[in-house]
Length: 251
Image (cartoon, rainbow, N blue to C red; front, side, top):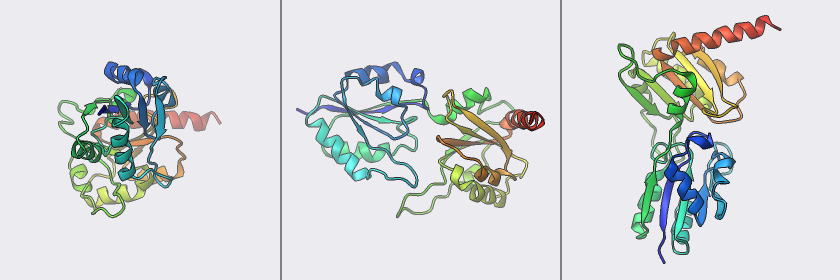
């Protein structure tokens, strides 16, 4: 028997943001390979499935991609419904293409189920549109992260000229990001919002400007952090600054 492997987007974290199709596949799954950052409540929806953690975390033990590819192929030869559960959307910084290519080469049927990516959930939390007439007509999604043995990425130039930008997996490189974008000509007054755990009750935002983005290194984050850059976030950063002043005054 050759089953089907479904690359399913788990969304930004909140279980009620799953698509109906994603929830249906989890309920029907025989085995689920899930990322480290997927909410355990979402994994638990696969009540009758074997569950295998194959997560990747920066500076922590990670499962090799080649090993994941092989496990998916092997699982499809034993199970009818195999779910590869990825945080956010599988097709955005999810290494989906490597898995799809391996499955196709092995003759394993595969499908992709989209999920809500973190930038959209963050915009919803902030109640701030990523695009705005007269202010932002384009959005760039990028990451400064480069895998071991991979060539350097030209991520900075597109971000320097974008009306709105979303940086994934970049909080740990806040200082380098700020210096690079400033060197590319971005204004030091450009608003920046760091949002942790978008869509979850534990969501937290930090309002900054590009000039003081390096101060983000002084903050401790337990969950994934997304950086949003652009003039559309001016009101969000002003509100965060006001809240910070109120907290200091109340001490």
